[in-house]
Length: 145
Image (cartoon, rainbow, N blue to C red; front, top):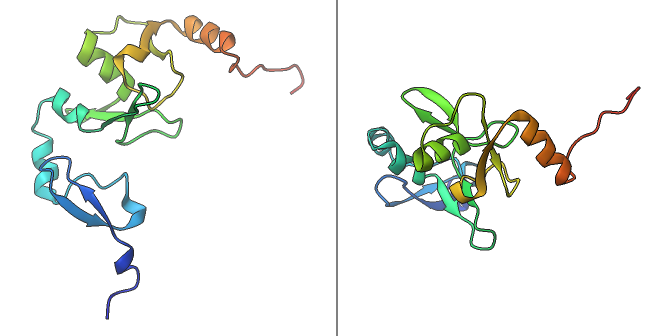
């Protein structure tokens, strides 16, 4: 007799070897590798190749949605040599080069999970605030609130 929940397993594709493997529905989007060997092997690939393994192009908007780990505010994170970096910053660096000190990577599309370099631009914190005001997404602080 099958275990409870066994029939609810779903098929995923390994980000390293491309083979199909089964996961519980709660692991969809989290399970990337069929085995620990594939997971370990994936870490030896060049950063660009590993990075692109966590990108899913969205055909309607042109956004490249990050499918890897994310922080609570919704920005993807990517591990390089044991240190986590925001995925949009990694995307910028891999596609366009270093980010000058004091600059942020901002989104034209306003989607934190987007890592399409064409949707990203550099700016200061003040630029980010002005951009949010122009796009009517700034949270105004009212006196006495």
